[in-house]
Structures are given as structure tokens and as C-alpha cells.
Image (tube, rainbow over all chains, first blue to last red):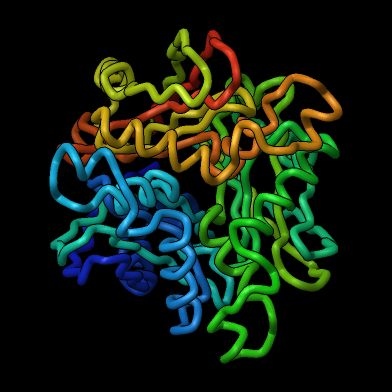
Length: 139
Length: 139
Length: 139
């Protein structure tokens, strides 16, 4: 059994920036030289989230609209009233989505569907430099 | 340490079909002959999701209603306007929920509560043949 | 490779009680004496959920408000009509959030951000005694 932990560095635009990170994760899984196991992608930070989607401009638009309906940027948040950083909407969206995703791989290949990409969503209200943790665990 | 990866084949009705897959996952964990570890269930596809629920008809109804309120089937989606397949609602619901679930097991027994079942939700707008990946990892 | 499984016992107030469990999980990871791997926290039960947040009173308030908007406590739920326990809202919120979280650790240290805490949310409509499963897996 082996555990390989790497990082992906990203510069995001913030404001619910939805970024396809599939190729970076695929590269890390390939180089890990582990046949079968699970890869966990985790954001160290409380205003980002991970999931999968069919990555195309229409759905990127639709997801941004959905998040704006669920937790509007201009809504009233106690977080904003206390800390004055204006990103209360980003925090609650991120908590709802969750900070990690786990994808099984077999013979070095992640078991994603053909039209299924891994995405990082940066909900924060400003551009951010992010480091995502990518951990490959298996044998 | 061992990794066992199996598949569950399902025929779903689509349209937010909520299916109790606990017995299939339990069977795979039992046969894996691994005492302690984690089982990851993952849908290869971008219109399905995994979670747990007390599986009874009332909550199945309530969940379908909740998803219809969060992302209505008849809403306006750029995905539909571009691809004309009418399942934009299914994609955004699936991304919000996430494609995987991880359940620890001890002495071969998943640590589910008594009234807690593992569910696969097929949000797509048509019946689908699905293969879920079930990966048992531990020692 | 080693797997260590422990439990965290909690007395919650219910009613979307949001509890910071970071120090308990950190303690279990430290004592597991495993360098690198993933810790999975799982609630055995269908009315609780796990995620992360910047744990401060403003966001605790904002999250409770968000969940009340997504699935109101006083809404109409078939679960309540059939079982008369009044916690239909708690079940659907928990299914939406999911019952587990996975956090990678490196050199015994969880890769959380500085302002990112692990939370257990008890959505149930009464105080509960809870046992969370904490499984540390790695080498």
C-alpha cells in the first residue's frame, strides 16, 4: 500500500469560478504508480468546494445561477456584519457543497464517466491563489 | 492492505429515481474479506448522486419535492438551450449532491445507523442503465 | 498500512445544532500514529451531516438560516404525516448534505485551512446522544 500526496496550484477569479481540474488530477494519479485505490481531492480553505459536472459553458452558467438562487451574494449575512469581508454567501455555499471529493481508480484510471469532469469551485468574492491537496491511496 | 473494486448494475426509471442500494453494497463488503476500512460508492456519470436516508416512501416523496424546488425540471437552463436534451436540472442537482459516498466498516460491518440506507439518485430525464463503482479498501 | 477506527460521543441540542469537532478529530489522528493518509468522519444516523466551515457565530447563524430557507422546519413533509415525529425537514437536509467527510493528512497533520473547522450538524428536532465514527487509514 502506498500514499502519495501532491498539490495543485490554481489562480482563480473567485466569485463562483468553476474550474475543470480533471487533467491535473489524472496526471497525479498516473505518476503515482499505484494500480487500484481512491484519490481524494481536498480544498484547504472554507470558501471553495469540489464536485463533478459535465464541463461545458451552459452548465457552468446554470450552476452559477443555482448558487445565486440558493445563497444570494447580496443577501444579509451575520458573517458580513461582523467581519465586513462580504463573503458570507461564499462560506455557506462552500459548507453546503463540501470541501472534498473521492474518486476510485482501477488500473491507474479514474472511474469517471465520459462526460464527467472534476471541478473546483472558488466561491470567494475575490481572486485567490489556491492549493488543492490531491492524495492517491491504494496498492 | 487490499483493494477490491466491483460494480453494481442498475436499471433506473430516471426522473429523480431514488434507489436503496444498501443490500448490494453490504454484499460486496461481506465478500471482500477485508475486516476494517472504507467503502467508496461512486457513479460514473454526471446526472446521478449518492447519499444516505431513512428509506421509506414519505421521505422519497419529500426528497423529490425538495429537488424540484431547488432546481425545477421546467426551469430555464443554458444546458438545455445548447444541447436540447432537457436534463439541465438533472446535471445541476447531481453536482450539488456529489457523485460519491464513503462509509467506514468495522469487522466487515458498515457503520450505518439502523434507519440509514445508502441511496443512488438518478436525476436524468429518462430511464438509464447504470454501473456504480463500489471500492472496498482496508486490511 | 493501518486502519484505526474510533468514536466521538456528543450530546447535541438538535434543531440544526452546529458543533466544531476539529479538536476531537485532531486528537484521534495524532494518537493513531499513522503518518500519511485520510481520515473519514461518518455519522451513523439519517438526521446528521458533516462538512467544514470557518467556525464563528456569524456563519453558524447564517447556515441555520440557509437550511431553514432550503427545507423549512414547518413545511409539509410526507414523512411527518406518516410517522408523526416532525423531523422530515431534518432528514431531507441531512440527505442533501451527506453523512461523511474525508480529510487528507500529511505527517500526522490534517490539511485543513487556518480558518477551516470540521463540523457535525445535528438536524434532528430534539437533543440527541450521537456517536460519530472516525476512521484513520494510511501508512
